[in-house]
Length: 346
Ligand code: UFG
Image 1 (spheres, rainbow, N blue to C red):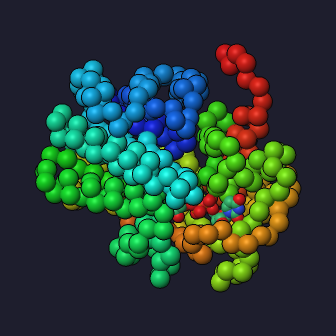
Image 2: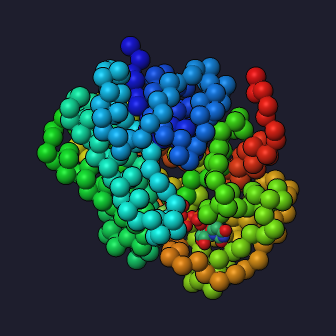
Image 3: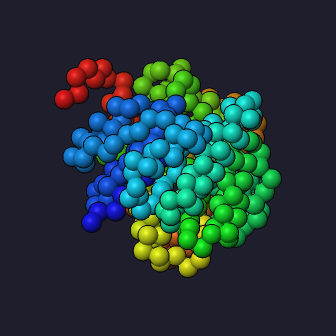
């Protein structure tokens, strides 16, 4: 029998790519999403790619009573992949209580349901933001956690602790936290991708929107960092590579192959890329020039971080396969797709 996976936030950016990978790997999927930052139409696009329409239940995970009735309806769930969360670093500074309430209450409600229903497997979206500016690069999972610079980052740190304590108290629940570096790009079909509302905060959507003419110019936040070209360094990985890691993680938990109740893995390429190199990669991959200007630093930015992904390589048998240029090319295809009027998609 097919295993059934609950994907919260399954119409979002990383969630939708993971739903596709799960279906293509023989899983049944049910999605919970409140559509706060995504569109129900994503489910139709997932159906176009996979030939399967996963059921979408639209509600807020902070509503514990509604979540209980969901689990009465779906009694055969084998595992949960939890993406649903607020994720804008800057916004979280202005709306800390909204971030703590949304990200942590939803997590606790889900863990509570797992205890009540006996669902044993939980995969959590975490972030390399927990490392702050690491002293040693590349950064491995045992590097110290630094005080969070934003409420958003703190919800990821506290979230990991809540999971760790819950698992210590309940031997029936096992979990994996995946610490993402910088996911970019879109599905090769061009049908799903990142859909930022308003002005993008992240680099790649800003690049693609500038290339498309929606923004006048890209601001490069600082060229006076202690890096070879002076701009900040990140580890950009293709979202499809990232999505595949979730399939491996849930398989590992369901198959009881994890070594301890709670495991943590870095997901990145292992390569550091500067902002200026990222722009060059986009231009090379697409043949489209990006107008940019160097401006002052952005408050709260980390100077440089990239992953040591060797634990995930070894234990999960996972590594990134897509190049930076390929990720940029798919991001561009997606930007062009969403700007076209769709009308009747069928
Ligand atoms: N950048 C620009 N101009 C822009 C946008 C970004 O120069 O318009 C630069 C940033 O200064 C940074 C790099 O591009 O050096 C990447 O910035 P992003 O905002 O795309 O990504 P961050 O690494 O700052 O943040 C990401 C996620 C967060 C997560 C963090 C973990 O968006 O959710 O990684 O380090 F917390």
